[in-house]
Length: 297
Image (cartoon, rainbow, N blue to C red; front, side, top):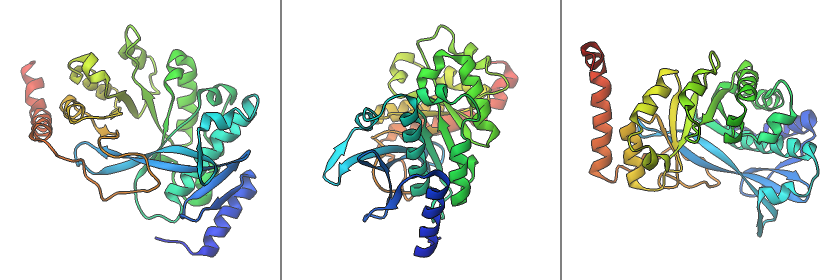
């Protein structure tokens, strides 16, 4: 459902009043935020449900420009400031811009996937997610529709990871962490998060080749009640292998590129018989799982 221009202005004014963020609507209709001498806007990449092949949500990425003609790396933008304070402000502004672009005035039921900077998680000692929740409350979006993607760097500190998960979950967010195949026993480390298991685990599609058969790992992750998202899918082969392994969610440039658009009328391209065969095989295995378990196979 669309909103009127007066409602839109009131919403943006409330955001500015609550946060002092400089945000406005650009000519292309997207919300942009001002940080130092740059304007920040959103790019969205579709995340697909592997079972329905339809769009389940979008991963948000920041796009920064000095002006309309000159794109600028967000990391270059961060170099304009010193210390953690500018980073915290930049990171929060990015999520506010993403939320405004994704939820404001929309009628879709998609989920928004956003990441946070590891330094932010370390510098903000408690109550992670409270500032972002204020933004979501203003625009009427539920925190349960936001997936907080915890960066892989935090895997090195599982005590911090548990603390961060607890904070975000207390506000109702869903949590995604990253699989790390560099650890000796990552599944045991995942088990150590009890009772704060993540809602999702993200795996890079490139890990499919290293793992050989990712099925047992996916099954172990499912045992902890988490969905599995294979990301950075670049080829039909990776798509096929991810589906065969039992993926729940799929993301990558083979399926859709990040762009200034929020598309839901998309389907995973069933371009090969191989994909459809893998999908059917996965479905048959799930159907027969009860009998397989009963037989002790």
